[in-house]
Length: 208
Image (cartoon, rainbow, N blue to C red; front, side, top):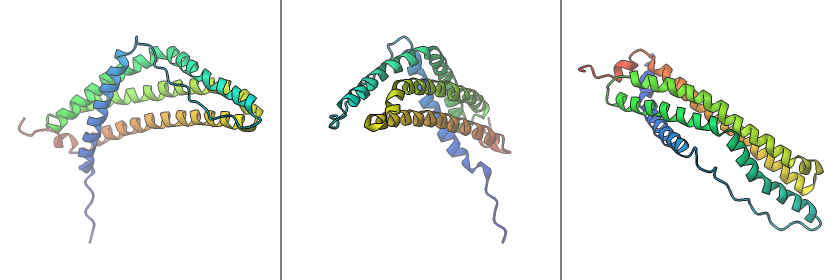
């Protein structure tokens, strides 16, 4: 007995749900970025270290001093990239707004034109996000390597901690790029799904 082929449009409801979620989140984050473009860049507290191991007080003081320099590095990098981040927030707000409106129209069976426009704009935003957000994280990584390099070269407990902190920023770069690429992949997949035969008809009211 021949198995019945799977309907490629069975994923339309899931696609619409995710588009709605990403559209709503994008509008919220985009608006937040635009409203805060003149506000001071938030600072984060310097983590406190446990007591220094016996005999490593001098190295421990060096690692504490290095950690205390990271917030200033963060402020410097974010300030340098603020115009690009603000432009990215504006792109996110517009693209996500169109995507959200298109999703609502598609769910109400008003057609897929607005949804297609939202997906096209969202793909452009996702490409920019890959570049800008990864660029910011790479600059933070470069700055942290400069701060922690002397300690890492010295070895010992302080060197191990410096290497760990640098590795954590490498992970941040990787995750930032991965999330942005995954978002781009979803938008590309959604746009291709809308080009499937019958997709537009499924999102349109025949009596309209």
